[in-house]
Length: 293
Image 1 (tube, helix red, strand yellow):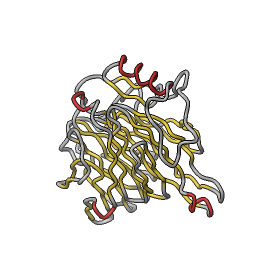
Image 2 (cartoon, rainbow, N blue to C red):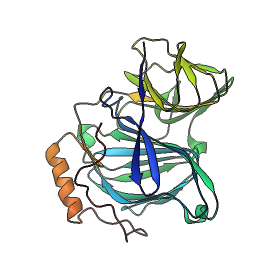
Image 3 (cartoon, rainbow, N blue to C red):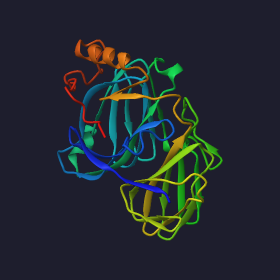
Image 4 (cartoon, one colour):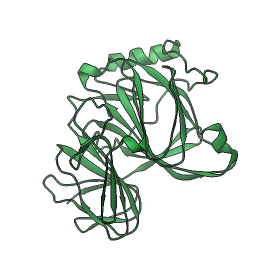
């Protein structure tokens, strides 16, 4: 019997609420994924937008993929990129980076939708202190497959015999799934760990009902046949297990709590740097972060 976990709502501030599927007490990580956040679907009214002020990261890579809406990414490397539906933003924090995420100014002049996923991938220990980097990949550059009633996009890593151009640090499974009602698809089983998150719509996995906004971890060796009862949006993710436990504190991920303490002090004392074009605001270090589970 597959494990079904309902996601929990978190308010990230700046007009952005998410449903968090990982981590939970039942799933601290899935492959290299240590955070899985579902954004929306939400309607941004005229004049409104998302404003996630500059904040720091270490020891991870953030992966952003949208089904609707746009987000303006800026970071302390000088990256300045608007991500659109179907694109991928991959930001490697490594030894430290600062970024902000906001609704583009022109999009605030009209009502719009926002719907997508942002995940965190913990870097292998040998890469935790790697040089920070940012890469953008257009929708046209990502492998896709079309089957009857099914469209799948390989966001990062490998899946269904395809490999994404996104540079990864460990064996990774990250596939966006769009299914029409009654369409079926067997979940890729070529990775050590895998899970399915249903963003929108009702589904069945091996005949068991799966409601939307739930994380599903199939049994090892299960056939894992997905059927869409309604139009369905989902994400399949996983890959190689972590090479040891990770500590998570606010936006910091590390195999060492001492390294996290250093990052906390660096942010307090302004040693992370600033974001060109977005250097008037920042998120202060919290007394207690809200990424507990």
